[in-house]
Length: 361
Image (cartoon, rainbow, N blue to C red; front, side):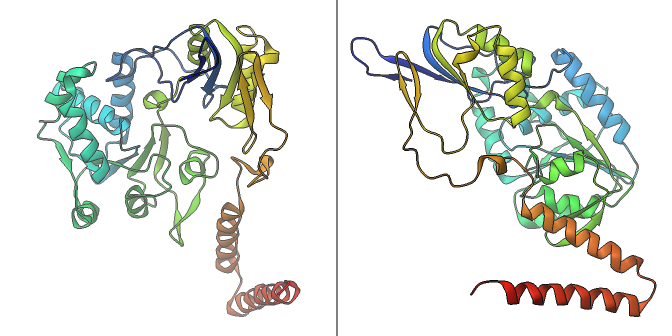
């Protein structure tokens, strides 16, 4: 973005999501140089992936699918509908076509992903590997669900199959319905292929929860929970530093955004070898800055904060309530008899009534 500022414009660069190396369908990230301010994502600012290639990415996916195969099972892949779903489709169909995986039905359970896939196919010649991607869409193993009835019918599919469904962090969408049907089964696998933010159902599963609540119901987690981060839309720490270095000279400030606090702090430490540490800014929600050709200045009269900074990207009361419900169910199930359960329920009711009395009206 160039903003009029006297004889020369003020040049700002927003990184958006910087994809990792060996990214399917995309060329390597590019960008201009000679900037005043750069606003850079920091999602994986504290992480380094093992270097890989297109072949290495597909090999890792192949191994995960092979390990998930069960005669009566399913592999569920929560995925963002745009880009990640198309990458998975391309790699899975190629692995089947080349014989590295057996014939496996692949269901893309997302109307948005189906629409996005048509857009990708229409612009295939503008993508890296786009021609091969368009060919992959003709695979007889690939199926797209459109209607709610088609989606619900997936719960009645027999034999091992793969379902790709939104959302990528399991926070909404059709993946929640598939999880309700499969999480409690030993023969199922859930493969997380992108970043899982703290507090999301995906992160809770990734962290090893044995029980979760979905749409008000409690489910035991018996499915295998696996992570394959090679399909993430975000660069790792080394790639982020390399991308910023390639943008030099940056005359004023680098803002680190779109990351949890440990990632932002770790990336700031690494970038200290590339730009002056004093020019690295870690903005918080609702903080305001005036950008000039000599540097960024915090605006003192910023809007009143909508939420305290220490509450951003943290577990919140929704997570606490879910945990409480799980604990109550465990206590009731573990009670010695009906009388003990009745005592516990009355105690909980009494606590709620006392809270209602103390609450201001």
